[in-house]
Image 1 (cartoon, rainbow, N blue to C red):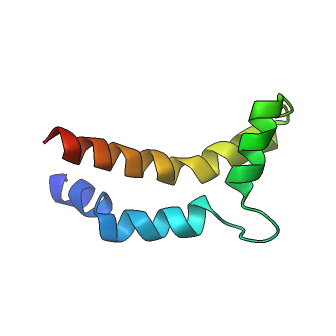
Image 2: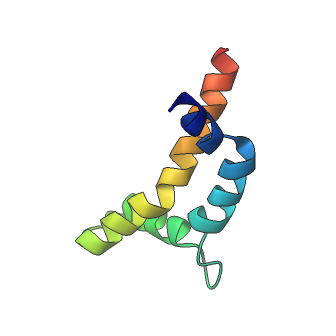
Length: 73
């Protein structure tokens, strides 16, 4: 199990995941940017928008976890 988690948190997996899922769709603007703007403006109210924010943000959270884990070690 530890090997599977280590493989999933490898930078070769995380960076493409962030670039593809985190920033998708690329045109007209990434959903993560749109949802963050909605969050800052206070207009993020629909459940689908909240789900979309979490869906596009989880790759960033995994990458941040990996970076902080590497810095700590």
